[in-house]
Every structure is written in structure tokens, then in C-alpha cells.
Length: 401
Image (cartoon, rainbow, N blue to C red; front, side, top):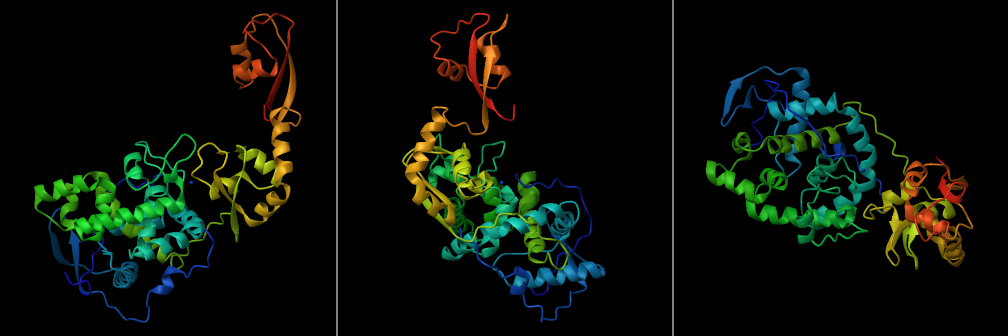
């Protein structure tokens, strides 16, 4: 159908479940709404297409002032992109939800987006893919690179283990590259290209990204339908809502100023960054203590590391001023690590002398102070689990305890 004469309008709200799987150089980003030409005068037609079940039915319906404004903006958004930004009862339902119930999510996404969108736009442009697909990461993970679904999908783009491996995302006991923003974005772009070569339609690409290409091809073959909106009633409930959520989020994220949505302050301000590789294994909390860098910043810059622990020889990303400090004090830092390991220096913990009482045993004591039995035995040079009443045990416990 000709996009210039067809609008989709909200007619009947149906209660649908809405959810987002729910945690670079910063560049000044041009607001998306400035990319749309508002100088064009567009009058919504008197006839509006409403999606009902399989086939759309054309009916007469007068538009409210709010609906006219949203319809005009959606038309302009649709004309500025190769993607299909349909405005119908379903997408309008999700727009309303993001503008009301989930407006705090939108506010937070606006604040966090500057941390990831410049990098995503660069990769999407490199692969010649619509830049609006950056908003899909909100639907997938709420822009949390450490997000993990119940099915095991992980990262900004929610790759399953097998799909991640297929697109060269390495997963080990210490690192998960599905959580690496840049590498996972490149993998997502490669996957989008493959899906588009199969389906040739961006709505179907989105549906296949959510439900799987094999599943979508089977449904298309069974129904002999190739248009997403015709196919939608035959899809799983999650996939039915997936494309409308994306369309609604694209609209709301583009026109947030027009809806007076405030931008959340993420408090992460990093203008320049650099990389460094240590010759020893380094826990984040010791790096934070020595060089005064927040663990939150370390997690943001290095989300692919699983346990706030940097393996020996792996590359870590840091604020540039921190990297310069490490270069000057690297040898001193290694001495510091050894002293912390030998308990000559205590960081975030205190030394406690515990006197064994009747009924005590190592398992009980370790549980009480949230320690491991092996740690207690190591600190006290114990060769067995046997304890005697009156024995003195040296324990190093968290200062929070």
C-alpha cells in the first residue's frame, strides 16, 4: 500500500503484556526529532486503516487532536526511514503505554542511550542497516549489557549461546563477549544482514530476530502470508508484540521532547578512555581502591567480564586519566596486590579473633561470617577440620558484617 495515503489509527485498546528484558567515545548526538522535516504540511486522510485479525478494513473515523498530531509525526518518521512505521490500533496502544505507565523507562533510556547509541549508529551505518534498529536494543535489554533472560539470552542484543558462538562471540568462565557492547553490536548487524537477505522486509526481520528465522518461515509457509500485519495473528504472543513495541519506542524516543519527557541523568561522564593489560589477575575492588575509580564505571566500560575480576593479560578499558596513573604506578600496584593477598593490607575487611565455643565447627563458623572453610583453614594453617573449645581462629570478614 502507498504509505503517503494510509494511516493506521487506534480504535480498540486491548490489554497486552508489555515488557523489556531487563544494565565508546561519547559523541554529541543530534536529537532524532531534528532529522524529521516538520515543514511539510500533512493532512491525515478521513479514511483510516484499522488492523483487525487478518485483513485490514477501511472505515470512517474522526481523529482526536492528539491522534492527528501523532499520526502526522508517524507519517514523517515513516517517510524518513526504509523501515515501516505503521500507526494502527496496536502500535498506538504501545505508544500510549510508553507515554504513561512506562514513561520512567523511556526517561532512563534517553539518559543511557548516549553511552551506546553513537557506537551502534556507527556500526549500523557501516553495515548499511537502518539506524533506527538501535532502538531494538531497548526492547531486548533496556540497554543493560549484562541483562540475562530466563532462557539464557544475554547482553544488549540478547544473544543465545549458540547464536553468539555462530557470530564469533566468545564465552568462557571469565568473559562473555555477548555482553561486550561493540562486539555484540557487530554480531547483531551481521545477523540483521543475514535475516534481511532471507526475508527482504524489515518487519519480518524483526519478527525473525525474536522468534527465529526457522519458526517464521514455517508460519509463513503454513499461512501463505508474507506481510507482517497479516501474519501477526498467527504468531506467538511475544512475537505479536515485538514489532509494535519497536515501532512505539522509536516514536517515543524520537519525539520525547514534544511529549515533555525528561532525560534521566546516568551520572556516568567519561569523555576519553584508554586500555591497559595487567600482568596479574586484578579484582575490581582493588583497582577501585588503589586508583579511585568507581566499580560502577569499571562495570560500564567492561561489561563482558563476568565476576568483577580481570584475568591476567586481558585488556581492560579505563578512563584515560586512570590509565595514565596506572602507567606511572604499575610496579607499586603489583606490590600492593601481594600485600593484600598476604593480609598485610586489609581492604574492605577487618581482622577478627574468634574463640571456639562448644558446638562450633568450621561449617557453622564459615556460614556465620560468610566465609569459605578453605579460607579459614588457610589463614589459620589448619590441616584438618578438627577444632577444640578455646581455640583462637583468625578471620578476615567484610567490614559490612
